[in-house]
Length: 385
Ligand code: SOE
Image (tube, rainbow, N blue to C red; front, side, top):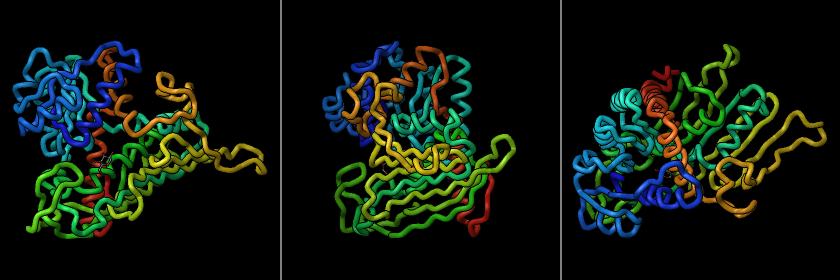
């Protein structure tokens, strides 16, 4: 695993726990975690259960005893590490968003395609596809229970930046993160909307902006928080993104509408990834802050029986649930990372292409890029490249 911050902790939990609950066809060994600070990454290895720690990712990627490279670094290093690992014949799991630019994502998708021809697999870490409720939502849509999809509303709302004195972390610096709320959490909203509905966005009209233009520079500390210093620096990414989209018309019929929001200034919303899908026969609604529940509306019921009802998605019949607990005992944010390990290891063992692929990640990058281009041009409707 390359990196050891917040996602490093979440991925470590997934690698360690998945083989203990799921009968995996291969047994992943948590061999080495890599970071620039030798002392800090050695401590991370001890804390999260990695056999070794190292500071040179190129040396680790070249090792014969390494089969999978899990990239959990900020986006500015995804392309270099992923392409080197794929060319070294290693399977790659890369955190979202795939890259900081479309050009980088195109090079990564190309490397992944060439590697796949040699049986080397790759996946992007959009873990919210692996929440049982969203996987079940996709099943309901695919089974036709919503009929023709007309509208999709997806938002990812957080509020960890409403304090203007919160420090300038790497997520607020374009050269490290590529974009702000748009790429960090807007990417999740786009991927989830397309995963649940099976639709693909092909045009965008949007606007992005920065609410707080400069912040205190970081002292020690990593990740989302950290301590502030007296010096200040510019925020070079978006804080809020709002955009509309049209999905490619399935079967040449009506091109469904999409409404999207990604913000770190939604006061009171801590990790509210929400989606609502409106169809001709029904609707569904999900909120990550209530991740064991899926609200479902069946418009085919007699009028006096209609209404949104909450399905508790904890039955063994539901996706991913069987190896865990009895109904009603609930799963959490961390379980999606175990499910990600299950799906990746199963695909590697079975010789199939994991999803979402780097090509899927490139498509999301093109959607994000279209939002930025539209915003720079008065919100003009812009094709997804
Ligand atoms: C911060 O916005 C963050 O950690 C994202 O980077 C993650 O992708 C998301 O899952 C939770 O929030």
